[in-house]
Length: 322
Image (cartoon, rainbow, N blue to C red; front, side):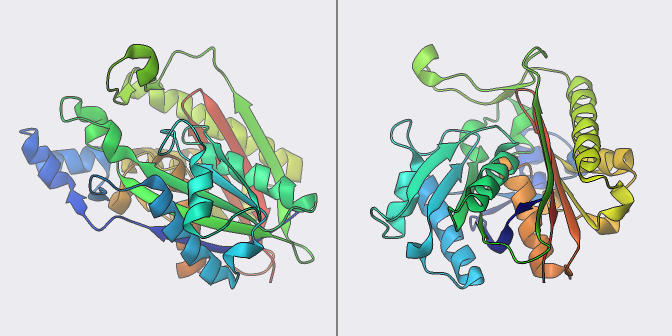
């Protein structure tokens, strides 16, 4: 076990809620059919000029309040985003720290692993805490509305914006990471892609390069493999895990993931219907929802499992303390 404790979480959504009906009408499509196909009812889009650092800092302030901590107690800040943050240089994590008035008290850097970013950061943060660097903040911000266009309906109809923060600290007895499994298969055909504008010289948008069926097949297999691997590490069965928090790219995929794993839907915290596809913020958003709306008891096990472009995949199995 890697001894670590989730001290506090928080999530922030931009004020503007955008319904699937609005987007369907803009595309000249049937709203009911699109909502059924995507399993998404609403998503939130941030107004122009919104900074990732500012939105992330607000989520972090709320997580610190939930943890009962002052910002100056943090020893490390990990900023996670699938789209690179506010600037290429410097790391957006630096600006998040500055927003909280921190100067010279902790390190801060960015991490990008597509939709797997939070799970990867949770592993890095856990190992940081276990080796004496605590507490550590993970700040995830996805502004998917900036990288979509009405000309490409597939991402346009599902992407949303969100910010989430989680703070990890010193564990109490019996709590921590029971297993962590990660994999990557870059030999797979490209699935979700966004080119670098400094390379192409044009403003870029995200695009899906594989068919829906191909993406579903690859994602389900990767999630299945990651789940099996982390459970083997912990020498547990999925029936012994109280809560399952999978990546939620859309409502239909969430249903397929639930069926593939054979998990009672009551053990999952669905969020995609109201926030849309929010990349690396998907799993921590459901984690925050779990801790705020459900009863998590001492000894409960939480499986966070995801898949992202790359193809990256992985899972972390966490056991809660008192």
